[in-house]
Amino acid sequence: MRPRYSRPEPPRPERRPPTVWVICLLLAALGLLGAFIGALLLQDAVSHGEEDEFIAAVVLSLLLSATQVASAAGLFFGRRWGRTGALFVCAAHIVVIIVGAATDSLGSGQAWSGVAVNGALVFALLGPKVHDWCRPPG
Image 1 (cartoon, one colour):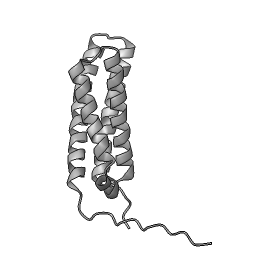
Image 2: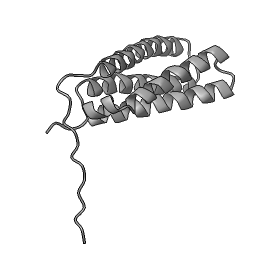
Image 3: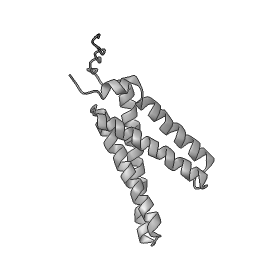
Image 4: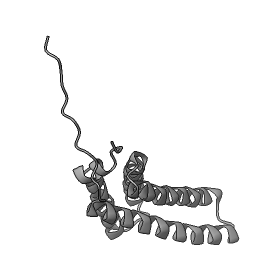
């Protein structure tokens, strides 16, 4: 029997790749924007006595935005959970956009642009530079 060897993984980059910078800035900006709009919607919904289902959807949106900002911070510092969380948030956004488009809650332009942005983020998050950056050091 021959021993099986695996190739050693390349070391983690010393400098943060530009791809990671761009992804983190986009995730943080979109997450903060979503949190701001969600807070305004929540305040308006509570003050006007909206239905509980609507308020629950707004709170879920706020939690998704907070997760997006936290994932951006984790990815910026090269944590694996940051990359995983960012992939989860982008996939959740794509699912919500598809459901919104199917129920005619979103316009065609909104749906296509949302899917395009989140799809591009998923594509970039699965790239080798981001994967190498999120590898544990050592």
